[in-house]
Image (cartoon, rainbow, N blue to C red):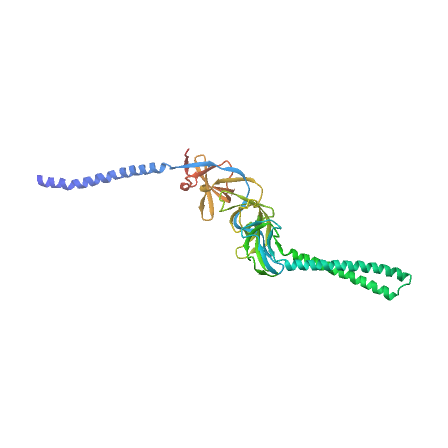
Length: 369
């Protein structure tokens, strides 16, 4: 009998334990839910750093690339035939306008000049004598002491002598010009970029001798996208840098807006003139160009690093009270490490500059000092 009761108690104990667990389960679940509700109620705070949005006086500009070209480039050629007697300059030399570049053997031209000068003197003497004779015959003809035929004859000889003197004068001018051309002079100030001949060579009319380039001022050629063409005009200021002098900034001024757009690149060629008195700049240098389109104006600028890009949208976060507020902005020019904001912000607002990647609209923030 005792064994049967003991067995019954042993069988009942597991059911009692299960019932106890079943009864305690709602209590445990309630406790667990209470803990979760406590966790949800604890709002997360994001640490950020902020700056005050600044308004600065800046000049709007267009940024592009270009290259430097010689202001003028001239091929100096011989205008007469002969042996090149001297070459006075070499490549790389700077020459002033009118400097002697080379000479052609001038003996034949000097001899021709002397012959024409003598012929002119003879023509002048003949004309003087003929005029004197004409004056005498004219007086005699009026007194009817010579015939009309004799008078007409001397008049004709005087006209011929006069024409001969004019011809001799023209021949002398040509001879002098040809003699002068034996001295080949620089047509402008500039550098000798190429020497094409050597002393002793025979040259003809049109034989190239030197290439001369003018480097002060220089031409700065660059292109502007068609969307910016409406902002262009002659006399706008240009600043540019070249890799050869990374710490220096050079200045120029727009002189020409080309009349047609390149259909391949959809851009317009622009030409500016840049002073080069120090002759540091060289034709062919690559230039990074900033073309200023208007005078300075008040501009809202923010650090480039504060911007967030989502597809085609650009946004930032500002702090209002202890909350983050999302702002969609429209940006303009970049000024070194700062970006112009055209729409969406105004000066004096509190801008998040560190930690904005972790923010969303309305999130609670703590501004780190």
